[in-house]
Length: 462
Image (cartoon, rainbow, N blue to C red; front, side):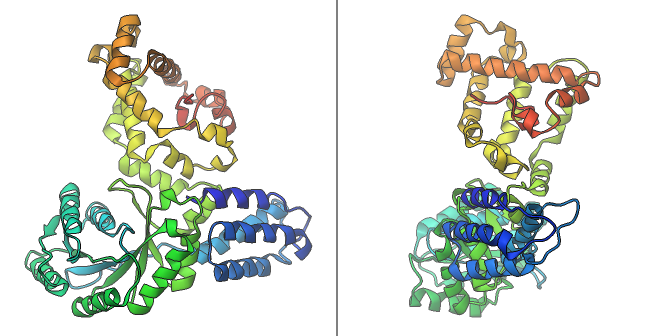
């Protein structure tokens, strides 16, 4: 997400020169570039105008401290205005109601409403420790009811049955009664979507809202529709008292116009952002972290949170102890590391959040292909347990058998073994206090790490 905008802004912000103070002259060209970058990112024109005006007002006459350059001061101002445009801080769900706290999900068909109900149910159950009931009031699409039932089973929350013969209001009232009797904390209500905003749809959802009086009314919108997303959200906001937005499919949106336009146009906060198809790919929306990501500074806080929630600590400690005792790092350990990276959304997702990644050439970034990780896992899975533990056994005929079993070529097997050996050498250096030596050998930072290894010591994929 934001790849294009990030690239354009990074380039334009480099060009500011001058000493001591930011002036209209030394920021004029950069402001024009910032304006073009935002328009290309499909940010709504009123938002662009206000953003550029605010940046200019704050920047002109700003003193540059001894430790900063004019460019750095300007970046700080742009970052502050990006945060302000998106809402400054994360706004949590308000669930302070007599249980059940009813959350109504609205939006157009295809925006990812039903999937978002499943993702939000998982988030509330695991992160907020809430008991969750879900119900579908979409009486026009039997497939939507079935889909929600399947998702509820996947995330292990209760599903309240409904059918297309019932009225939406009757369905939800029945679910509320059931939630009260069974002491559920939260009821998530999926509603019908249409292909476009129409009067019948708005009347139906207004009547439903009035009948159930939800504490939260979330509008689910597809980030890939750009500023249209903001305009659709505005139409819904005029009909319903929206309390927040869930921005879906943000991982497929290289521009980011929706995220920068919605808050300004609707006045409502983006509460969550969907960053992939996986059921756990829903993140609370933190404007300050997203602004940092847009400016190519990474998102270390989100990265740390992701690692803490998705890394299997026991496995990681087991591997560390094994290496420290000198017992060696084998292909089973290597496979575990690959699958843990997949759990965190793959290497491309991790790279998105790493500081300094904007400065790395696209040719290098493109070498990090998550399909390659899946291929590597398939190759390791085609080996016997003994081969995984003793890779030296893998010679000619074994390589041919492993390649055939994993649907790959012998050269793919050779490449994996070579990458594994590089990783193994690094792990040996960690034994007996060699970790600091290894870090120094890697150049102590991203520049050194890219000279043959990916960040974190993963071998670079060819």
